[in-house]
Amino acid sequence: MSTDTLAGGARAGSFDLDRPWQLHPQVSVRPERFGALLYHFGTRRLSFLKSPALLTVVKTLGDAPSAREACRRAGLAQAELPAYATALQTLASSQMIRPREDA
Amino acid sequence: MTQASTTLPLVEQFQYGLDAPICLTWELTYACNLSCVHCLSSSGRRDPRELTTAECRAVIDELERMQVFYVNIGGGEPTVRPDFWDLVDYATAHRVGVKFSTNGIKITPERAESLAASDYVDVQISLDGATAEVNDKIRGPGSYATALRAMGNLAQAGFTGFKISVVVTRQNAGQLDDFMAIAERFGAQLRLTRLRPSGRGADVWDELHPTASQQRQLYDWLVARGEQVLTGDSFFHLAGYGDPLPGLNLCGAGRVVCLIDPVGDVYACPFAIHENFLAGNVRGPGGFAAVWRDSELFAGLRRPQTGGACQSCSAYDSCRGGCMAAKFFTGLPLDGPDPECVKGHGERALAAVGGAPVPRPFGNHSHRSRPVPVTIGRRPAGPGPVRHRPDRACDENPLAGFRP
Amino acid sequence: MSERAATVDVIEAPVFESTVEEPELAEAELLVEEVSIDGMCGVY
Image (cartoon, rainbow over all chains, first blue to last red; front, side):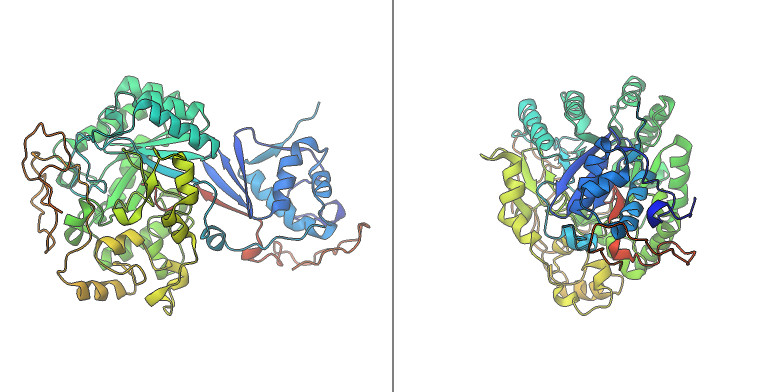
């Protein structure tokens, strides 16, 4: 696992904020008061997103050119990126989100 | 504009309830080919009021609208319903994942092939002994063979990762490694769950619940295996020993889970089948959704729970006072210790209850003329239903001969 | 806990000297928690 600092100083394991991502097609998203529940029908894992902003990021990942851009559009400040990158890395590790291959 | 939301621990996020369950147990029928001594739903005989196929589909439609992620279909033995396989297909076609809990009676090689090819269907085989000798004392003669045959058929069909679910008892607590070996042999995942004094379990709980020493060994064994062994979060009361086991570690009843029973009654959880925990019925005007969202019972469960007598205990933050159903059916107050409290407070509380009568549900679908598999049978003192009293075999009324 | 930037200017974020992972993120501040769907009590 790379621990290098990423562009912009968002250090969070090896999550690449600068590439396009998407929600895994087998994931069901259920908004909640505290954020959201994500259930992966393939892995049968459940993720609790404890931030409404994180839900926004996750829902807009597929339409944004990069995860960083999705974060920006969700109104996140630069200094919040490390925490959100960590969160996104967790979701990537459990296959809730996956890299998007753009044409 | 954005602020970090309060990132409360999950326990605090959920204790106020959700707009829909995350998952739930749905008992499709009270009919069963077995008469397990500890059956939490006192199953055996079908109830004449059970939901029709159309009513079941309507429930599934609701679960889909509510985005319930998955349903554990049980019973009784759910596969004895003629429409069972259609309902499973209907659920998965409507974005509701299914795990069904079975004694294996209908898992033929052909059925196993079909299941192996199904997405979003998981199978759970019940087993309560790593040997026929131990298992059949609980589940009846031949039940071990039936279960193993089903497991073999699933493995043969390439269905890996099905669940083998064990209720831990005094009699099988020494067989944990053997259960693990059986799971490995069939490419299955082992699941250990807690014996509760629910249904027929009330009659055998004194004899069958693990000793304090076995409970400690079980905890250590589970901690060593982490996520490799499932528990359905049923041992959250053991968190008082130290590190919590994997899972939410809280009572989900009425908050994240509930039970729908064969006649459409909605209970807080499958271990709490009793009028005190009855929230409503899916046949009501607003269906299941209205019961989940509006019932008085669930509103009460979703209010912050005080620890009561447990408040001052150092373990309370971990164990949250244990299992509501375990307390209720052993006659303990809900705002006091769990009967199997790791600090021993439960034992003392039970001694105070003594031989006083314990709460019993009104309904009982046990087979009437079936011989009981074991001679475990010291009934709790006090009035209560006389179980297994032979009545007319053709009596349709599940309450025949019943005296509350 | 990290402070939020008051403006939208890109600010040179601090370079972390420490080699341990994310020292400032305590348990309760994790934005994502995961559990198995089997991790809910009340499902047998």
